[in-house]
Amino acid sequence: MNMENIDSIELKMPKTESDRNDGINDGNIETYKNMPMLSLTKEELQNSTDGAKRENGETKKVIVEFSNFYLERNNFPDINKTVNVFEDEKKYWDDFLQNDKKAVKFFDNAITLLNKQKIRCLRISDFNTTGLYGINGKSTPWKNLVKNRGVSDKPGNYGGSFGIGKDAAFACSQLRTVFYATKTIQNEEAFQGVLKLPSYQKGDTYYDGFGFYSRKSEDIHTDPVLKCLSLDPSYKRNEDGMDKYIIGFDDDFSKDDLKRELIISSINNFLYAFFDDKLEVKYDNVIVNQEKLQDVFDLYSENGIDILTKEYYETLKNPQKIVTASVFDNDDVKIFVRLDPNASRRAAVVRQSGMKVFDKRYISGNIGFSAVVVLEGDNVNAYFKKLENAEHTQWSNDRAENKDEAKANQNKIFDKLRATINEMHQDEYETSIDADGLNEYLPFTYITGKRNTVESLSNEVESKTHAKRKKKNPLKKEQHEEEFQYEKDENGNIIEGTIHIGVRDGDTHEHNPNPEPNPDVDTEGKETVSIIDKDGFTSKKQVSPSSIDFRLIEDSGIYKLKFNSKQDIGLGFFEVMISAEQDNLAVDIVDAKLNGNETSIKGNKILITNIEKDTQNELVFKIAEEGDWALEVLAYESEK
Picture 1 (cartoon, rainbow, N blue to C red):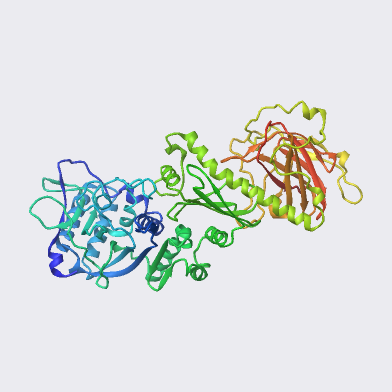
Picture 2 (picture 1 turned 45 degrees about the vertical axis):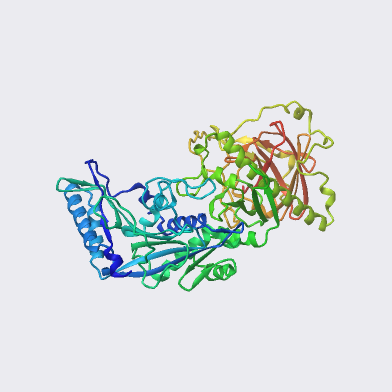
């Protein structure tokens, strides 16, 4: 920027008639303080991909460049007025505050920085975008980013919906100062800076605290300079797009740390955008795009890329199945699925732009898988955008106009994913069994329709088939603790007829209002320590899902569990749950047979004994809940 351009800019601090004070703790800025680089990268890439150009009906790949540079003090627009404002703010707040001097410390640091000869800055520039048009409009991309507060007027399928994402940049500035420059497809150009400080008073005049580096004028208007200026001496914009300059960028980040944080955050949040060739990010000598994605993974795999991102990348590269779901339009959701016993059982939920919103859990409790769910249609993106929180990290049905409808629309997606996983697991199991010549163990299909009635377990079962479905807490404590008692033969095997449930002498346990959660398997598939079961089954550890191959089939209300254990289990139990969206529901087991023999049951648990490694077993059971259910089964091994 030459001196002529600098002289055409002045800092204007709008006056106000209100003596109400806005302090240093700006809620929007503080929102992004916890993880500033992650927030900055996510918001900036989201905004850039929202502004992607379209040519001949095709969306162009967006390129975003990050550049670290130092601004010479004499090239800082209206530097003297800026220093004066910070000094006035410090004086006012030092007198105003009696105890917490956080604001005073902020102004001390800022004044020291402003008096340096060079000030660190970060430039963020995007290309193949439309630029921020609407320089003279009211609710336009330029006005909503630069001038308006808390206003978002983007089309429904675009990313931002709260109008506060722009504050992520201010959270990374030690001066809370950001400049914007743009060239647009409407042949507009503009340059303007924004200063976000607390309100303050000087003499008898009250100031808003939000200042604007604007074109010099005799009136109070804060209009931009109608040129696309550059604060970076090594850079000049020659095409449509936007530049953002974060002034006084955080000194805690070295150049190498900054590069690492930007690249890793970009990949963790926009993996699908890179994979689908919608986005390219540049910083220094590193380029992340579809072609170089594997190289960047290799470079940063051991140095920050999230383990879930690695899983999702493998799933996108080598999906075992790609299916679609329909929410508002035909096939408006695409799902990539891969089975892996050691996978995290998570699904990345991804916007049309390629940005991940969150990792979906509670899909399957016992089948290891990884999935990527991409909202491809405009309508489905517009709908679920309204359910996102301000940080764009989750969906909340509380934000929906109709909560039941929101739940139903989510189920259209996740029920399809759950069914796909079950079908793939069934096919995989059949293949493995058939390879060993054991296909006679699999006479039924998995809950695809009613077949001939299986031999009745007992008359008692038939009398309980109309029991109502009820939600239970499987961890509800009784006032006494029960345990299995049994005898073993000379070979150490449990003698079936000697098993019964007894009460421990002297045990008078009180109800625990805060029971420990059910055990689970961690993201690496390792077993975790369990708790003492309150229904009489004593468990020390969960058997890893990868240690048991099984197939659950249903026929006329009777369930058959065909399973083959990869380890000996002397004593243990299966826990049966109805798979629900958030919290799985415990069922009531009313009768069960293990390999043709009656076995003990308690609540939703079925006793298993003397299970030998690499042998085929069959568990047949009935549940009180009427209807067809997607059941999840977990195995536990007891050590007594």
